[in-house]
Amino acid sequence: MTKRRTCRACGEPLAKRLGPGRRARYCSTACRRAVEYARRRWDARLRRAAALERTAARARERGPGFNPVRALLLRWEAARLRRAAGKRP
Ligand SMILES: [Zn+2]
Image 1 (tube, helix red, strand yellow):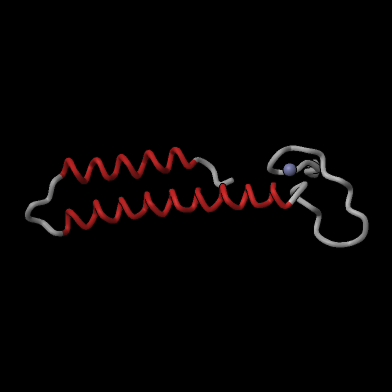
Image 2 (cartoon, rainbow, N blue to C red; image 1 turned 60 degrees about the horizontal axis):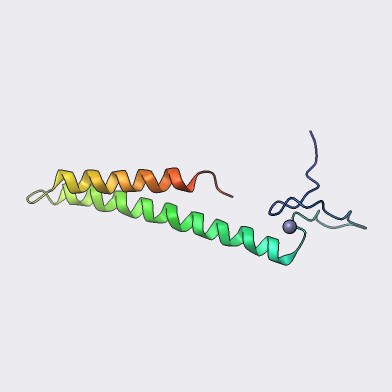
């Protein structure tokens, strides 16, 4: 197993840590923030996808006036968001 010695955001080599403490994963605060931001965006996309799926499910439960095309479009949109989100950064 190789240890990661480069910044997870920009790939710059990380300076060697002197002394104890957690190994740094990012070269700078800016890089750490960038990854945190990307994660929040990822979480938001998945929450949105889940909300669309709930809306589609509720539409069916309501019975009369259920529009299967609308429900299908909601599910497609949810699937598209999940695909676009990919793996969590
Ligand atoms: Zn960096």
